[in-house]
Length: 365
Image (cartoon, rainbow, N blue to C red; front, side):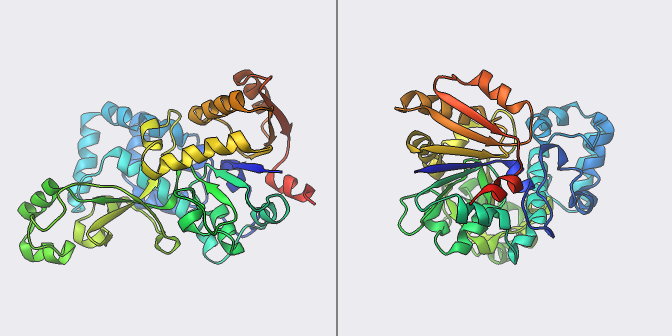
């Protein structure tokens, strides 16, 4: 039997390591356990958003805020937006956009709330691998964190270089697909020629040699390019100072390339073009293939709010020879009725288990 396991935010939030902080749900990014210390670092920008837009920090939905942050910025009174710009200027930062600022905060929250993975693992995710999944099965995780990644790596039967679906599997016994990216994936952007010219105009040649080790514009790459890389050893925070501070002090450089986490950020209408770009396109294609070929689907803590993924389910159900059966492990009382209204009941059959991850794992034999 070929199984497909889908993990949503509820699976990470319900992890079983008693001493580990819980990664936040969508409405908890500004109230979760690590938010207090981080918000101190991110002031006064957060204060200005809250004050000027009369937002209740206890109920901000990160998806809604992210989707509307540019519009929110434009609605800020002129004095407030100037106040923020002056803050960056006084701190000797390059000014960062509200989107960059929010991205930085999201990455920081995820990283800080899962630092316990450096020396611990989740016993419930361990149980899923030992007692539910078999070699050759597929996991789809919509979570940025590395809880399931670390669990897989600890088995010795999965590795980053071929286990994420970027290319063909050779050694990994499981396939982990992360269609929204992961905090340990790096988007590597080579500086464009115009960027290098600007740097020469703004910095002395001596400084540039120290910053990026180049002597002239001509000996640098003329075109910008992107690729995905994975490295468990280089995971770290992405404070907004890393985005905005002067190159020499905070930018991380490897072989003249800047490294950024590669994520599809939390918004209801996901950017489809980004999701079908490069190696991430392979991930989505393999995700569709897994929906076509699996015998059994179990979803844990996933709300099915990603309409692109829902379209994949609908399309795959039409091509399958047999009905697609999906067991939903979730404590939401309304989720089943919502899904039944979205999908053709003749093609996709949902079975609701009003359980947590802990309950589900306890029932496994």
